[in-house]
Image (tube, rainbow, N blue to C red):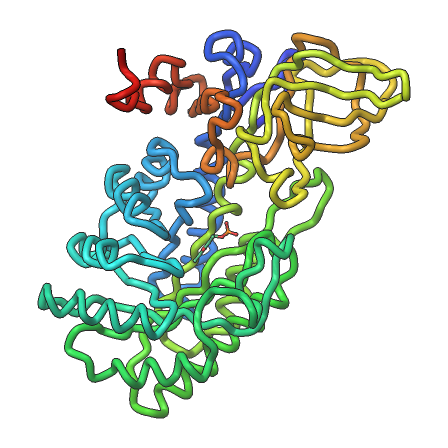
Length: 426
Ligand SMILES: *Cc1c(COP(=O)(O)O)cnc(C)c1O
């Protein structure tokens, strides 16, 4: 489900040659496909609309942390997409990109008083509360503004899932949310508060989940809690089902389709008469982006190891170093020849700066262009300037058009961010 294909022997993003982009913008550069973003949103929207009876007027709130570039957000905003945000900065990005407050959810395990105040001022749709102490602070902040923001309690259902221990969030020992019993008690405690309006429950159990079973189990927990809260006379009108659905990073991997995922949610919520929210991040953005890089050299050592040294590094794409993540690597111009095992590495002075070990690749040479596939989520957002490597550029393609949506900074611009201490100037 993406729009990165060969045309005339060269890999293209929609109608734009990646070779031409590398020549004009340089490398490393993230390239995003608008058509892919639209397709992913469209598939989810269609599935939600087909299940209006069970899911109500469901909100699809893109998890901004997956890809927060303003042009990416604006592309989604124009489709009616909402935003799931985890900081004041992300709320500001969503608003700047044209996502109205009423489609913004504010989540996160450590929101400051200032962030809570900002969210209230912007009239966000809902604040997902993750602890009783946060709830107390929110009530205090809301009281000073004479407000009563809509809240959902984030439940930790003790069902962790995901592609790696570091991206599992719903396990009993994970820092996110409160256990079921505590969520019930919090809901009861605030139902009479004049300064918050409890509207429902939320959960998000992990990321890169490739099996619907744990998600279904978590949704059932929310359903049972809804029944129990209503039996106590509480109002529950919204269920936020989080994100987490995985994508096929390996070419032939099978992951549940968005349609099956939404249909499962509809089955679980059938008859509850709530409004659902989905918070997809990876599902929307991962396959909508690639990281374009040029081969610096190939090091063939006498001990037999072969290193493909790229001009992209762990500071540009951190997922392999952070989570042992797999990204398919494709040459921009297919290369003939025997596949040989390569270690794919960047120039950063860390052994962790290794994208892949023993990856079978055709004979590539200095100057060749390659792309890391499925790099549109948790890629550029995590990039940094370690080793004083300028932030990777970002480009958005739409049909035949392309635009640089984050230019690579110059060294002057990078250094200008670090004013010299007065006493060191001469
Ligand atoms: C990260 C996150 C998401 C998105 O997760 P994906 O796996 O990218 O879909 C959704 N909701 C919350 C609360 C998150 O923290």
